[in-house]
Image (tube, rainbow, N blue to C red; front, side):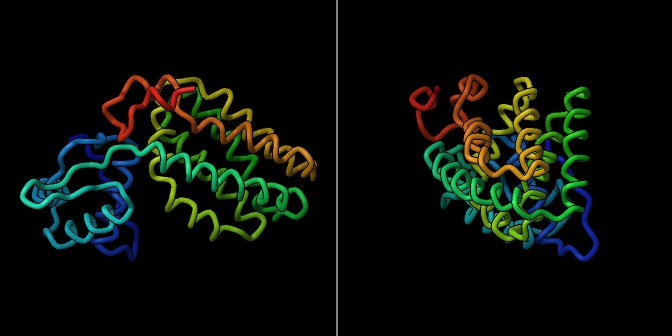
Length: 232
């Protein structure tokens, strides 16, 4: 198991740390959908007792990222395309409203951070660091919500986004990022120009990138449904 061990943050409980490590590794596909995972193995790898592992497993089941079966153990949940599409739809509707708000009133500090984020995305493209690009992509959108005082909405949306996020990792690991970065730039420019009129079109174009593409078709075993029925 190619497990990325994250640093434990100050004040973070062992249970929260274990959950964060496992959640991150599942989202980044270090632990692949459909693969078996055991409390004993994770406890040994992280050098902790079984109790925080068990607590983290319960949370992962609630997230829809883990499935447990009596007498059989636990497996990483397959990617659910239908749930991902529902989450994409909800985010697209909300994000149009958020970007329009951002175009009308936006925190100057967040605008500075947004423009810096775009430059870091370009650097990641040069370095071909798709996992850091994934983190910056999330940070970019979170900054837009934060800049107009709606960060809690972003945090709620992320709880629905685990299937989408695994699709995004697949895409970033196997395709060019030019389009993604250009779309981010366009949204940020709308905010700078205070131009809400083009927000709907910009968000539609960007969030359409979550639909199934060729990178997903290379791994049909990762999906709950027949992936070919959802390809566009």
